[in-house]
Image (cartoon, rainbow, N blue to C red):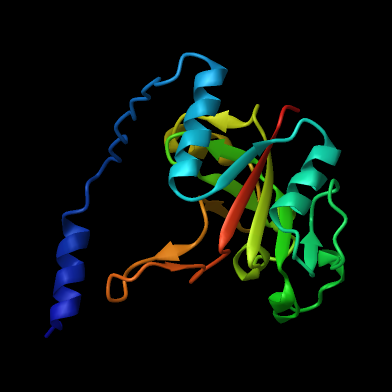
Length: 198
């Protein structure tokens, strides 16, 4: 006699559709008519969720933004060529060595206007733990790489072949425990986004 599990699996196999159903088309809603509107929406959402956005037209402007925003930072780990840190992420053998990092700097690939999310891959992070273990995170992002919503974002990142990627939106915060807001519980305590024009 078949077990309940076997009976259920047999019933599923007997009733399996013979043809695959096509997925429904996902409608795309155009909310922004100009690049300026798209950029403004992205900046506004990031501001609402606690991030800071600065326009940095040059590499020196990026360096200045990091110095100004984090003047007391001692350990800077930079995976971006504009900022010379004192911790080389390529020289790190184990993620635990990153636990002293005050500021991490890296390049974002894509920004989403509807929620302020920024797509990072392992190539930009060098270490998967870096954007989460650092006290403060700086992401450099081109304003030419903004999309309206997650539908558009997923269409673009589907073309990127990487072992690991993550959307990061704002500093880490949670209020699950006793309705008390905690900043930096699961990641960086602050997020600085340096918007470039290239």
